[in-house]
Length: 247
Image (cartoon, rainbow, N blue to C red; front, side, top):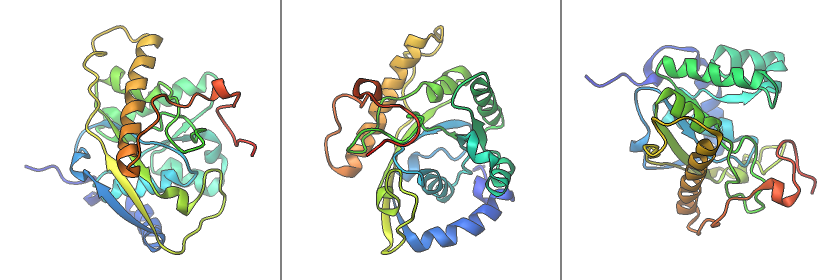
């Protein structure tokens, strides 16, 4: 018997969907590519590109349209806002500390979602891309680590058009005219070469490079442009990896 879609099961997400989707639909028209690739049951990591502060809302709504309840690893600072923090905690989102001992706790919290057969959205770039052309930059290893440690699929994804709704580091929405946002779902990443091996930092970095190449290839398909052969590395350009960039 076919599994019942998460979006059809009563949950707090019904409240969020009722509040967010009608407003978002006035501003955004989705165009989905390979929607059949979105797993409809079981745990997995969804790993999209990231270049706008509004990306989590856009991708969260996209996931809901595709039949899955979105749960994110979100910046811990967002949880300090009484209203936003309540919504985040109630809907099962995971606070992520940028550094320190609590950063490891976020991975454990994500694994709890995995154990319950839920999807977790992890931005492997860790922050908005520093690439001036908005291509995916060098990735961090958290998404791949969760997939390998819990032996679950990791599904790359990409979107394009969000920058017209809110630019990188933008603080104001540009709702009109209505924007078209393309979302493409990739095939589950083949991690067979990395499974059943000691999870070392070098292995995680290698697998993360494979993931970032897959995300870049999906974005290239949407943009109808070739992706750069090498991912942008903030360290090589004297850039910090968190916070806003000057200029």
